[in-house]
Length: 611
Image 1 (cartoon, helix red, strand yellow):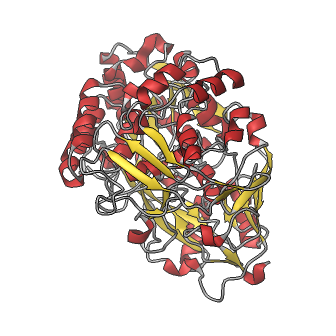
Image 2 (cartoon, rainbow, N blue to C red; image 1 turned 90 degrees about the vertical axis):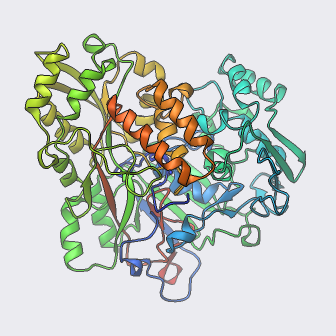
């Protein structure tokens, strides 16, 4: 969710086949960019015994910060953890240990899911008419109802001309009528508060209209059988008119967030802490999805994953925010069958190595397919898997689409002995590509969690085939927003390679949430999750064919062809598909794994005695 991962996180992070992962970019240790839901034989970890108690402070501890607090741009799995608490969408996914239920859409702000039978979807599949609940409120002073006009404003803010634009523009620009044209005009606007407000209030998206205060209508360019999934993304959240007084997600915005969820952000200190309290304007009667048992949610940042684990085991904290259980702790916790440990099959590709196709460094080496293909053979995927808990949690992956996602067929075009790399082949191919003496690459890496170890493992692998990597260490909060999502930074050669993660944005029929956001270069720009600026004509054509398919069964072989094409040009180096080990304190009950954030749902957990 970013997912991506969050990464969209994230993201990841990505709904008719089997379990996949959620698409936002990944959190600090999880893919994603918020991405298959249930624990592997570990449902007992929910700790559901007893009568739910209200009250208390749920304490989350982690390494890094959110990428954004503005729903128009947030695309990081860790951010989705708290977005679930302070924002609502027209549709969402319920908390459940049943993977089928967890991946089945339900109405949230909307009164019902639209169908042709109830008149919500037109016979030609091009018009969606959605009715909003009249009792859902913003926590403004005084509180006021969320309207169809707020949903229209939320959509109109997505392609603002700042670096904090939506991270998956292709979900909207190629689907909703008039959206691309609206965004094209927005791109010419000066990124000031006054100019942005003037454009938004003076221009409309033809395919997004408020019929009346409680009815919003979407008109599509062509049928999209996953359109309701798109509307369930946090990007698609409504926005209050007060947001026009700020630049999207700037420091001032982050001090004035407005909530329609069960919690509201009452304090935010970058890279340090986030505190949420109950939203007095929210009622359970208005929200069919969230239960909101605790009174407060406290996020403390700046801790390494070992310290996070120690605090949760000692009872000083309750859940991870953006980390997972340290690799060294997993064997002992599994051996003792510690009920606080949950291991969840993610079905995600996390992390993976991306190439900056735009980088001018080393004579634009990474723009050359032969160079990228040589580097495919460099990586010891087993060693990388050890960083994430070893072979019991991770399986080497040779392709882009992971198991469980639509279009997956096992495929490994750059296989090496036992998946441990082949430096000799890498060297010879680099020489044939014109780099007999190797090259120097800048590796952009997050400075917390498992990411430093990943960068160091890649550094050792590349060194064995004559390539020197210079590790550029940045914070998790800056990683996506200030670097990977900024085309100017990429074009300047501030980085050559990096290791993000991805959590698909929904599950099952999710090709639009795996291949398209990561590799459709036609939507490249600020906020894009096509971080390396991959723009391959053959891949783009296959994306269009798959999206035009009538259902997931017809789309699956086309998505597989897109996977093969992307691997043929070495768009990325996939590492592994993995399971995530997460932990909770003894006092946490109803710990339900939320696949979009790759963590537990904070709106469902309750504490012993409400402590």
